[in-house]
Structures are given as structure tokens and as C-alpha cells.
Image 1 (tube, rainbow, N blue to C red):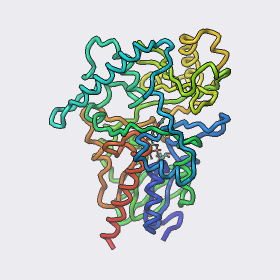
Image 2 (cartoon, helix red, strand yellow; image 1 turned 135 degrees about the vertical axis):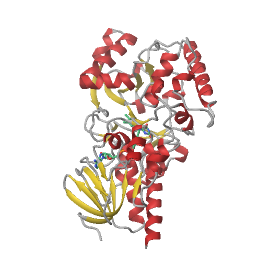
Image 3 (tube, rainbow, N blue to C red; image 1 turned 180 degrees about the vertical axis):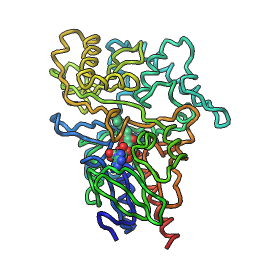
Image 4 (spheres, helix red, strand yellow; image 1 turned 90 degrees about the horizontal axis):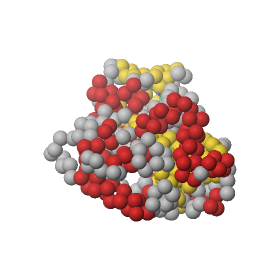
Length: 415
Ligand SMILES: Cc1cc2nc3c(=O)[nH]c(=O)nc-3n(C[C@H](O)[C@H](O)[C@H](O)COP(=O)(O)OP(=O)(O)OC[C@H]3O[C@@H](n4cnc5c(N)ncnc54)[C@H](O)[C@@H]3O)c2cc1C
């Protein structure tokens, strides 16, 4: 039986993981309700069409590992346009403030850093990724800046073991209509309650009691897909508490990465899909994707402590910082050619509290702990639960499917 107060399976969180899980549960013909705190589906996948003449992805934008990414199949099924232009980080940057010879030297230093990091065997103790920086290497600051874009955190906070476990096929594509559009569309037709934050799950009795701001819901099983930060902060609680889960989530904080979209006047001066680093001598710097999809825009990307500091000052702080860096590269007249369009501060967003998970040093195995079911009726999914595809939308999808399969098997055993 499924009503808005009694169902077989409740899914908490309508992001990539929750949508994938709900679709699988519905396909298995189990009763299901997807509870989402926000007024929209998608979570950290969010395409906005309000602030720009083009759809802009405020959260995930790249179909990483696109050759094996299940969201690519969904995009194709929805007849979206897939752009296969290689990403700016796999091509040389514009030689503005960063001559090509220096780019080559940086690339070499970065490759050597990753080579050293990958040499950490499973038998050795885990350490911070920063341990693999070569002391006094000229490019350490920029390698660290890239870590703030990739992990949302500087290398001193990131587990080397976890980073080494990340699997990337090297194929990165985009969806012209927006990655967020594909993910939200995949949720169309599911039994969803929007604007419904869950406050606690009471799992003392025979059935689960799920307390929401809209009233209680009773269910036999749940798939919890809320971000690890929210589990760690216990904004949503369990009775009795799940101490091991909270501890695992605390080992997997969400790093911070924010995008600022700027409009760009006289765009023809720049090559389409080019890239600029604000500075190459410090880790607190933005990276600027100029004319993404050939559009008259710049997408600024800011990560780690810099993004956290800027969030304290709001959109104006991001715009000031970005324009100052761009003027530093392109001259004072450039300030008149750009205008801020949109930024979403993911760190202060109460339903994400960050952008994507990294593991703290020594905490790589928290991902398996976080993903482990409790009593065959509380299941967990979300990008932070993925061993090898964490921090991504396709990782979230795969954990959602895995949790749903486990739940379906457990329900089969109970019948
Ligand atoms: C700026 C940025 C850029 C990114 N770029 C990429 C990229 O290029 N490629 C890529 O693959 N990934 C990227 N990501 C990461 C990707 O967006 C996420 O990994 C993925 O969307 C996470 O999906 P999820 O389902 O695990 O979590 P979420 O999307 O966070 O879903 C969890 C849901 O739970 C809801 N929720 C929270 N609390 C409650 C509650 N108490 N009750 C009910 N609901 C609740 C939230 O509102 C949310 O909808 C990016 C993210 C950001 C922020």
C-alpha cells in the first residue's frame, strides 16, 4: 500500500542517487515515496535557465567517464544533445599569464605528483595527499589549486588512499541542455513529495517511523541518500542513533567548489572553450572556462578554503575576486566586459552543506562503512558511498541502484 503516510519503501533525498534508486524500486513494483527537502528534484545537479539565455549547470556539468556513465544513456534516451569537445583541463590553457613552456613544466610536475601518490600501496598506512608534494617544487601551489577544484579541498585535507582509488576513464562530455536537466527529467513521474525535509527516522519498532516537516510517514524500509555532511551534522537523526554511520559520514566531508557565471561582451577575441588560471603562483585562485559551448560567457570555478572565504561575502565577493583576477590577466578595461549572472553557494546551502565528498586522511574505508545497510531495512546511497566514482553524479546513480538492488533482495528474503 502506498499513501502519503504509509508506504513500503521511503527514499530520502531526490538527487542523482535518490532518483536512480526510486526508479529501480518502482520498476520492481514495490510501493515507494521519494521525499525531497527542496522544491525541485536534482539536488547538487541543477540546471538553471533563469539567469542566462542558455541553460547553465550550477552543480554537476561534466559527464565524467562518459563512456561508462549511466547518465549518458539517460541523456540519449531523452534525446539530449551531447557535446564531445574535450574538456579544457585536457588541452593547453590560453597562454595568457601562463606561457606554454611553463604549462608543460606544470603538467610534468602534476603527472609526477600523481605517479608518487599512486605508488601508495594498500598495505601502507594512509597519509594526506600533500605528503606526495616534492618540497620546494615550483608548481606545488597550482597543484594544490587543482585539488580544490577536483576534491573541493587542499591536499593536506585529502586522503591519498581515497584519491588513488578514484577511477576515471578520461572521457568527459557535456549535455547542451544541462546535466541537471537530464537528472531531474529522469525523476519525472516518480511518486515524489517536494518541500519535505526529513527530521528523523525512528527504527525501534517493527516498521520505520519517518518524521518530516509535513508529518509522519510509516515505511518498511528506507534508502537514505542525503549528503554525508548532513548525516555527520545530524540535521537528520536516527533513533536509536547510528554512531558508526555518523562517524563514517564525518570522515567523508563535502569539499567546496562554486561556479560563478559571467556574461562576456565581444567574446570573439577569445577562443571557444579556452581556459585561464587567475594566478599560477598561489592555491587561492580561480580557474576560468572562457566561452563554454562557444557561448558569450565565462564560468569561474573556485574551490576549497578560497570558496569558503568568498561564500562569507556572498555573490559580490566572488564577482569582485573574479574580476580582479581577470583584470590582472587582461587589463583594466576588461572589467567593463563582464557581468555576474549567477552563483549558487553550495557550502551554506542547508540541504547540501558542500559540493562533493573527499575522504580525510585515514578515512578512505568510511565509504564502505557509510554504504553498509543496517538491519536489512535501512539502506544508504549517494556519491560519498561510492568506492571509485565518489564525488560524481554517475557515482551517485550507481550507489542508488546498488542500494535499491540490496533492498529488493532483502524484501524478497522477507516474503
Ligand atoms: C559546483 C559543482 C560542480 C560539480 N561538477 C560535477 C561534474 O562536473 N560532474 C559530476 O559527475 N559531478 C559533479 N558534481 C558533483 C555532483 O553534482 C554530485 O556528486 C551528485 O549530484 C550528488 O548526488 P547525490 O544524490 O549523492 O546527492 P544530492 O544531489 O545532494 O542529493 C541529496 C538530496 O537530499 C536532499 N536532502 C538533504 N537533506 C534532506 C532531508 N533532511 N530530507 C529530505 N531531503 C534532504 C537534498 O536536497 C538533495 O536533493 C558537482 C557538484 C557541484 C556542487
